Image 1 (cartoon, rainbow, N blue to C red):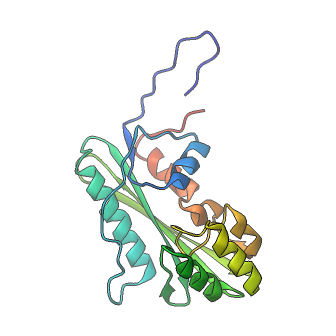
Image 2: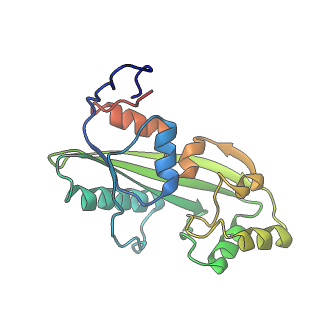
Length: 205
């Protein structure tokens, strides 16, 4: 929290907060909400989809595993983790690791509705977990081959769930959105702030 000019800094009574994510988007979203983690630690887990695993189950499992992995090294802190899943029909789209992945995702999403699910987990000292799952429904307009190839070439979709970043150039593809915009970016802010507030953590000014 900032203090008036010339005044002494105001001490924060917030518990230590660690963000279990290597995503710069989640860090930026927290900053937007007045939240600055004391540390950022990237969890190392296997993010493969289990056989017959449903999207909400998959996202929640990964968010919990991320939180636990980091909490093992930060037992006295609040550890915040999240996992975002893009779902088209019954198919969980991958986190795009190549241009081919981005192209495949965009062709599948073109002219169709899909759902973005983010599971948020907060690990508390002592091992307790608190979770939220948020879904947002989107519809993409029909994309031309030229638009798809231009987006692939810009490289923005690499590393993104579903092969696109709504906070970037891909926003022009969106025909409709029903739900939380920040959820699609990677962290539903309202639910996250509520989780943290329930544990005594308050955003700064």
